[in-house]
Image (cartoon, rainbow, N blue to C red):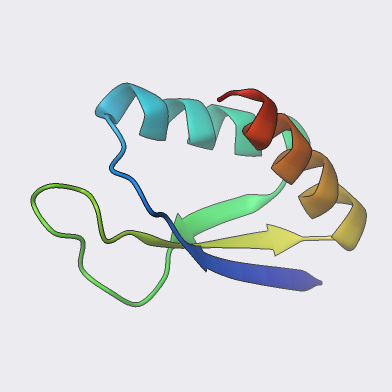
Length: 67
């Protein structure tokens, strides 16, 4: 199983967070916050994505297409 940990450089709304989790379910990857507490502005999230390399790659491409 592969794991990618990354920090976001912008804040997310509740709707965007929900969309990320929905997308993760569609691509069968695990998504969760990674070892830190986010600020109230939601600008310091560090996320972890877990799954097979192919699943993560597909998820990442779909996530980038959401912008």
